[in-house]
Image (cartoon, rainbow, N blue to C red; front, side, top):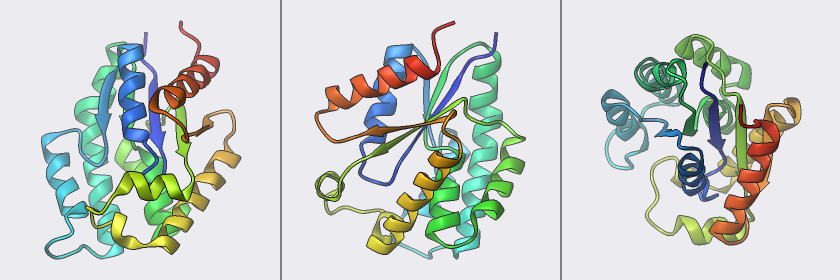
Length: 201
């Protein structure tokens, strides 16, 4: 039996990392993240997100994240899934499409093609995107921002538009969850949505 891959997505400050952890705990699933999830991936993550030092150009940023994803699939995702474990990942392919494709303006199809190569075609069974209002975002982000979080309001708007476009295009594989409210309220919404879309075998 092959495990199920659930990807959590959303703009920064939505609380998706917390919700990914809570769902993984609920399902007894492997919890991981992107960029990162492997020793090499964490090094590449720091190159992309560290606000200090030389920033990669947009295309380099997309390729660095894709390289981290290739390592992540080979070392973590595919082995766990093939062993029958469910996996919850905090960000996956859609993050690249939203942030680099829409946010950086590199093109959704072009960035998706790079990720398809990096993952050898491994897609998420379900994508859970968390949306919150702007006031909640500002409160959750605070003042200590990484390089991508510093990209500004217009960039964030393009990212959100990208997520909405992808969710609209694949309603059977995507679920949009209201991230406003308490952590427990959102966790209950996520659990209900996942149970409906991916019933326990």
